Image (cartoon, rainbow, N blue to C red; front, side, top):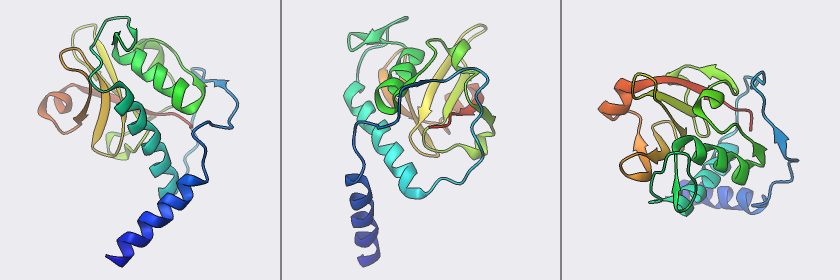
Length: 168
């Protein structure tokens, strides 16, 4: 119990030193950008997860709308674009066709918080979400709006296409 309390206090201390407003200059991520292979400290992943969960809580339940980019309705790639712009101060492509070219390809077994996960849900239909941990991602579901789903759900498991890591 003491160890758990210590780590919670340490995480809280680290997070209070970080501002919600990133001091990182707004930059554009282009198709050729590659993320370096580095080991990210647990505290940094926890910080990224906190930002993603904050975004999710703000958008949870927002209905799905093709081409939508507002609380009245948002689609999967619009939610990803808005999340990277609002939480990480990064300009991001609008469509899944463009987003699938960002960062570098990673294996499903390498997924972690902040990675993009792509699915083939139809002949020419692609879907994207953002991993909030190694097992779950948040996305704009066409039937349920903005939700968190498990990657090991039979539907998502069978429609998995690829994953990308963006250098945050």
